[in-house]
Amino acid sequence: MSVEQMYQEIILDHYREKLNSGLREPFQAEVHHVNPSCGDEITLRIDLEGNKIKDVSYHSEGCSISQASTSVMSELLIEREVADAMALHDEFLEMMQSQGKAEPDEDRLEDGIAFVGVSQFPARVKCAMLGWSAVRDAILRAQGAQDPQPTHDTTEEH
Image: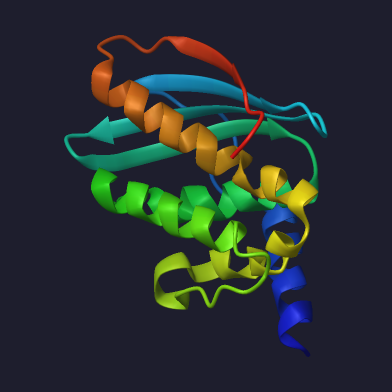
């Protein structure tokens, strides 16, 4: 099995078995993001405990890439310090902007490295980034919010 086939299998596995899918309580922030170029949508909730991510839950509709990427992201970020989660967001974004030239750190991104091939297709980068953009937004809102308040954002550019 080639590396590309292995990466495709990881993406399909996460699409079929979406980790942390389903909105849960408690949460400090809820955000709704839409990728208008393809119609992918996500509603995501974040539960912080101090500077640690206690839970990430979501409901999403869209292509296999957006849903698989969100599954990978949620699994990576639960139980992480917020600062480390934001650093992982930046590392994933950098990989997605590399046009397939990045050599991602598997120890850091784990199954997230499967999306390096997706970065060769600009239209698909937005799909892969949807959940990551939503979680970044939710973290920032949770850090400044006292009551969970849903927000609705349209994600145009990443």
